[in-house]
Every structure is written in C-alpha cells, then in structure tokens.
Image (tube, rainbow, N blue to C red; front, side):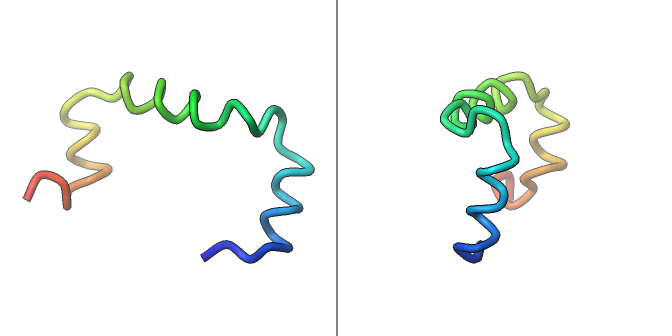
Length: 45
C-alpha cells in the first residue's frame, strides 16, 4: 500500500504522471512471452 505522503512525493518528482498508464500498456505489449511468464508467473499457473 502506498501512503499518501509517499505518493505525493513521487508525483512531485515524476515527469508526466498522466502518461503512466500509456507507458505501462506499451511496456506490457513489448514484453515477450518468456519475460511475461518470469514477471507474472501467477498468471500462467
């Protein structure tokens, strides 16, 4: 769980927080199958 104070500090120092979801989506799409399995093994039971 992220504390409100920590989140506020992160937002102050991170460029373009509104673009985070788009960057995350692009990153997920760029992952290969092996990398996805390594990062998220619980999804591949």
